[in-house]
Length: 157
Image (cartoon, rainbow, N blue to C red; front, side, top):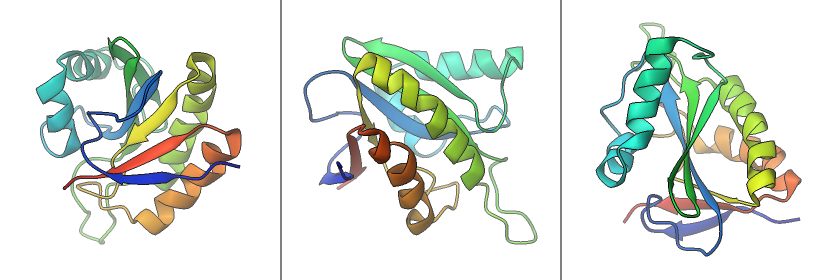
């Protein structure tokens, strides 16, 4: 069985050959403007434009849903709705929704297998979403790694 590969670098500049899906977490209120999405928007316009259209249409726009956009040859971006709102609640509940991340990754599996694609990502859900990597990592292992999908996690220098 494969395991998650960790490397230093920029997840928007995948360092392998072949098909790649860059995966990241989005919120469920149509907000795009802080965090890793800014690095995506700097490289490609389509993921943000598609996310905003998706939000406006409200078609399947909810926690646990995904949207995959081809941005260049061999590279797709997967917008995953895994965050409820954008700020920690007064009760101290972070925006991350682990069960939504799990549903997103489950929906990503057949897409990745069909494209024969590797998954590249930052430490999803652990920045502005307030998640803990020790919660996210086992979900990635359970869903992607067990399906023999190579996963590359980038720690930005």
